[in-house]
View 1 (cartoon, rainbow, N blue to C red):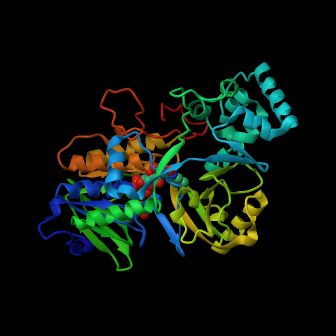
View 2 (cartoon, rainbow, N blue to C red):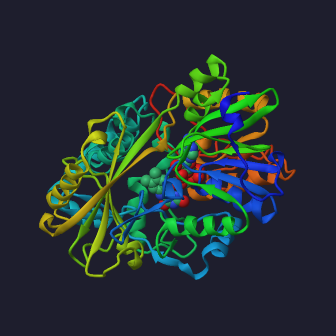
Length: 512
Ligand SMILES: Cc1cc2nc3c(=O)[nH]c(=O)nc-3n(C[C@H](O)[C@H](O)[C@H](O)COP(=O)(O)OP(=O)(O)OC[C@H]3O[C@@H](n4cnc5c(N)ncnc54)[C@H](O)[C@@H]3O)c2cc1C
């Protein structure tokens, strides 16, 4: 018996013995929802969170001098009625409903998003519009024989000029891969509803008929907690604690002790030194790569190697406080300008006025997509804030002199990367876990290496809890819309949203 076993914490209600307690790694939407469902049914739950202050994971809200911002704006919408109901139950009238406005910014002009023909033509001007038409005609007259890459697909469908304006810069910023190296299947899925023909048709019908086809990416309204998504997760944490759950902040799970029958306990490191937590059942929402690395005894080398093949895209938010009450009406703006590094700008006051403590000010979130190995990751905060202010001014979206303060939040593993290896790697890990560690369930976004929204993470958390209470659900069958696909049902087996894959990968399946 290792040393940490002697230090196993006795937490939770006195009545809970180890075998009845569920230890949950991560206080993000998935972990907290699992704890909610368990405690609602009188079960014991211990939630271990590495962040010293914030619950909510990637969906947390950070407060800086009274100004609130998200790690990317977090819309609340779900096709899953149970999840919508749960949000209402947790926050009641603190959930506000917002109109969505998000536009593309390119060369000093705002383009409606989704694109609208007349708006595009008007913004591009006569000369550029003619260039685009010629470029489109050239692509139609001489179609590419072999469509391999995202670039091939879009150039073939829209012409090179429109590709350069509307597709290239933002896609490359987000994923860090040249469009010529991204597989064409992503474009085919992602923008299949969009074509020059469809745009012209829409322009001619002027108005979308009620009940008519809606382009997938268009959602006109969404719900949002008055104080940002963090309010949802902070409120839920209070509720589960009232029911007896224990939430330990600032404790990072660094070792997972396993024996013949499965996981026995986990060990955390934090300000108070190592602590052990025993349990009968376990749920992990930490990134799969780290989970496998923490197993003790270590997993077989093939499983470790598979886990180490999983990759993540990291993310920096530069929050700027501006001494100006109104800047632009959008919730967020996609920045297609190639001369700046910022990929998207959130205006959190337009998500909810309560995100600012004083209505004379605005809080913006400038989003930078990167890898933690990039030099940007290690750039001092003050320099990043200065860069944000400079780029805002360069874009003509704000005045650097009015930026009165700013802060930086770095988010590792914001996006699980779907590359040519990930699917096989996840399969290897999953097979091992199911065989050797049957009392441990993987749930949530990085917990399952799925590029998904809060509703999906919550649904997997709910189902993990139901399994602990005797259910028999396959969490991997929750699709991108957070709906459970019964065995044999046709649909998105990956349960993921569509993301680009490099050219080397095999064709993707039917992710949403
Ligand atoms: C830029 C961006 C925008 C987004 N926008 C939306 C949106 O508009 N709407 C929407 O619904 N979703 C959105 N999402 C997705 C949403 O953030 C995720 O779906 C959700 O946060 C996943 O919840 P989770 O609990 O699975 O994981 P996470 O949120 O990642 O939570 C996991 C938790 O585990 C903790 N943890 C990790 N390792 C350890 C460890 N070793 N020990 C202890 N704790 C650990 C982490 O600190 C974290 O708190 C967005 C994501 C990004 C990156």
